[in-house]
Image 1: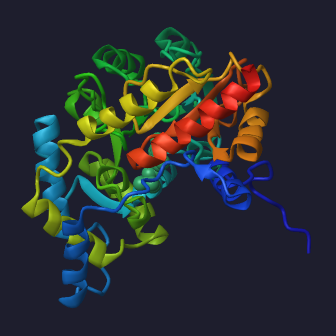
Image 2 (image 1 turned 45 degrees about the horizontal axis):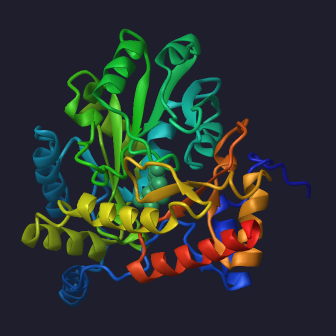
Length: 387
Ligand SMILES: Cc1ncc(COP(=O)(O)O)c(C=O)c1O
């Protein structure tokens, strides 16, 4: 039988590719974004407790109410508004499922979704599976700023969705209040929904505050906002995230969610709810925690040939290797795995049409010792190239 692929050009994600290559080559992996340190032992203890108490059957489709209440309280603290756990909050399988469900709920055959390159790689396949197509607007390095006039110029009668990601992976930039105002003006009086990927909401540096669509009076009425406990609790493998949207939009999202994953692992939800009830401050120190790691790595690399680009948020750090070579970033990343035994993530796979660029993404959600070892390998490699 000939099987016709619906996504013939989609391969394995660059994260998986580089992590596999890291394993094969015995390389230190500071490419893929996952912590190499344990979760808070009090969170782990909550999980053991709830499993022992028998919280092991299907969770409600929308999410365990105790968890949705904790999420509502957390949103109130962060964004100054109460979101109804019954009608506006849905627990999903990581941020990834929330993104997928929201896209399926909005995009239909022939519709267009605007995304910004370098774009997180989960967006486009979901748009295409819904029968739509992505209009990809490239952000130019090294500042990666939005050009809202260009966005306005790319709108058509078929535009149904604009996906923004702030803090942005992989650029480590953040949208500010002016960006959100400009976005609101662009979509005003048009049938366009916003999908705001805010999984790094708590990781902004140097005193910046996250500009969430949920704190924007106009945007919160027409946005799906996506969050991830994987990022907030250093537990990417738990795959627990959530989506916040007005009731009418939440109803549509849940229609997709209930036939996609139906409901999310019960004990994980009860454990997170219990943990947040006892430690509502758990996420408040994240910016300081990651800023110290950013500064450690950037300080170790500065002057080495891997020049750190100032990072405003996310748990990544971009470095520019132009002092060491001009080969394409995918080739350079491959050379680093083979010769320096270190895995990074090149930026060009996140673009439809990559600009000339010599940037690699490093993950700083690692133990200090890992960051130090990574910097040592990068410095040694750089010295061998220049020396
Ligand atoms: C920008 C962005 N969005 C969404 C996700 C997915 O989040 P989750 O791991 O909770 O599915 C990630 C994970 O790396 C991400 O970087």
